[in-house]
Length: 368
Image (tube, rainbow, N blue to C red):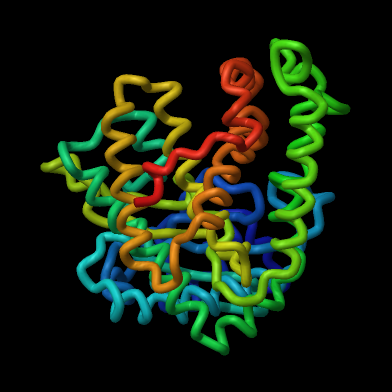
């Protein structure tokens, strides 16, 4: 049966698709996480094909997995596969000692809209889940965050000089709109509690004890500026969705330490604004400390290592514009993403930190 006759969102059809390929598998396992695609772990009949017992299969449809009425350009997967194939050898050459990289691509089937790629391992988990579950051994988060900073600087440096890569990702026009909408187009409606965001924050962030109309006007100006920058950026290759949920960690069973991390989900990659990549991960790491204050020192050390490593490895100057932009993105991300993704209970604590949410707070320790 040819792939167009199969529904590759279904495990049974995935097994049938794989049967006639080198990646035939005894079973497939649905992986959670992400909203856009259908992701499976393959338990390979012949591990020698990829040098490991498992691989990951990602299937795209022209709509979002979580909302079939939300259309997504199917070409996003071709862009993701191309980016991964360009970035892996570049990273192997530039940072061969790093524990952070991108997965190898073993197959891209543009007709079936499938990527088969390297798996971090059957017991791997996203960094977000790992940090919510446990602390890491002494120094391990600092090591990981150092390599994450080096990784981000390397893709910003080297990816931006790859003309074929930049030409390809510049075709990812829909993702510019999504990047703008997900944070900056929603910031003011969320802070004001408009429409579907009514009562998200309790108490309200706007009023005598919170944000003033003048504050909101300044934030609206910033949002308009950021949106324009996102839509017009041409010079820097960016990952586009650099957060703890897209960093898949393999943990050594004996030491309990992360010894490898794969950065996944590159379908938002595009020429972009580099401090948005940097600030997104910083915001997600900082958020952990509000729910696990006992890990504040560990996370603070990790953030410091991340910022210093990025600054040291970045070929372009990390200047006042970058620092202020990253800081304001931390605030915007925590205002918009944290309460709307993880529930209104998170919004309640955000109400006590309106300077963060206004994007007015600048923690220069994040950038060395």
